[in-house]
Image 1 (spheres, rainbow, N blue to C red):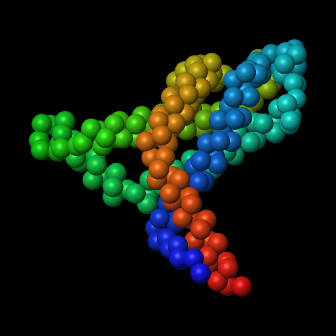
Image 2 (cartoon, rainbow, N blue to C red):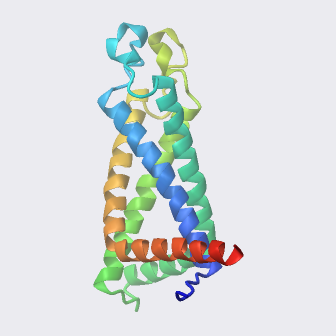
Image 3 (cartoon, rainbow, N blue to C red):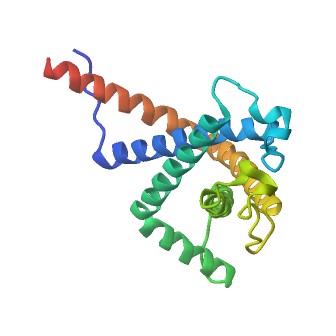
Length: 205
């Protein structure tokens, strides 16, 4: 018999939440690339030949996948922050003490990790806020013929689109760096997760 692989509930919970974030991110990224290379052309509606271009799915399906992938990611990130809120507060206090010149030592690796996490957090916040703008203004496909096309809330619709796109690009780059830094943890915990599930299922047979 092989050695039983055990995993704490907290680690299993973290893995499941991170996986939900990952799935939501992949859906949002892939569908975002679709709209990046096939710009909505929504302001031109049916007068744009590329508007009705079909790649695997119709445009509405791509839009739905992008929306629900983003919603899944937002919910998972909120849960992630709620679970790790004590850590967030503790690290925030340490960073604040360091900025004030008080004793708050960080290793070079910890500093890099904090910077990457901060970039991910800020870019995610901007991406989420700008996505909420488009979520409540789903009238773009009707273009200028719809009075709700550009309400001019703080910025123009085009500016909101640019903010959403580039904050998402920054977030993707930061997440890739984050994965690179923690790759060993990702591989190790993923292997342990499935091995523990396999052992559990065979034990019940």
